Image (cartoon, rainbow over all chains, first blue to last red; front, side, top):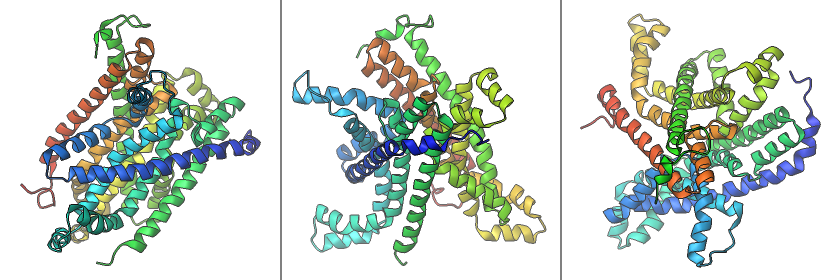
Length: 229
Length: 241
């Protein structure tokens, strides 16, 4: 089965693949940070008692959660340049490049998923905490930032990181717009050298190692930080 | 927004662009449904195996879940489409490359099915494990054998508990079926992209595709809410009202 297996191809391609992996890791980290910040705002909006605030947030989250990621990536590839031309008023405005388009698409897409995680996290904080904060004279933002969110995030960290691992896998879909992330690099080498078997199995192995170690670490972390009850 | 291009004759194939959209919806549904059959069957078996206490039953099932869950779907798809025909015995590989009808479609179905099976198995396992141990003990005490306990107590209860998460797994398969465009399955997203390339009506066609995805999702959700209500186990959280 592996008689004709050519390990040399992999070795020669390693520097190129590493470049791709750096792209993947960078995109994952930035989209995760952006997604969590935006997701927190969306979650606070969804939990608001003002319909005018909560409805748009719900609509956004439900829309993105029922749309395939690939379609969202295509959407942003198409929309971002138009938006830039609109904003700058210059019909020949330069694009922001494929990396930033992908970053915006992933941030906005993941924000919908992070929103649901964070909303559940906020709802898991006992109501007495908020009441006590208000009783002490804190206003909404003080109570949210100093009382509610720290406790909510403490409970959520493992799930947020697990979602980060899913995001890490999802970034492989930038392949559809031709970006050179890890998978894109592997597939370019595979097609250039006609070594599909070696490259795709190697890509699978690398993703497996990263995600397996990642989810093991999350499991350990979860055991450590679960607050005593 | 001008949707009149939909009735124009398409660049190829003889129909209209609306025909392309409908073909796309058909392939999206076919990939999703066939993949779901695989995912549900294999996922159920794996999930049940993972709840047993016999290492050579739950061991391999655990390895399967860890391996399949930790590799992106796109990689699965490429492995089924490009790698599997190369590493299976020569005659079978040759058949997969030349004789097999619709190789893209079946590769997508297999990849999506076996990938989602690992996720379904986690849901089935958690459903079975959420049943209080007392029920198993009571069933054993009344003289049922372990297979009978699964058949008459654990599975009927477990499946009813996991209807909601299984619904969302089906919707995930439905959305993930768009990944099949990378190996050339002309499902909805792929059709939307090629229509946008031929007509430059990008905004309209992407809007249409998004609306179709949302509508199908909503339909499934509404149907499953009825199913859920009928299958609900009385006395559990979320079953009030």
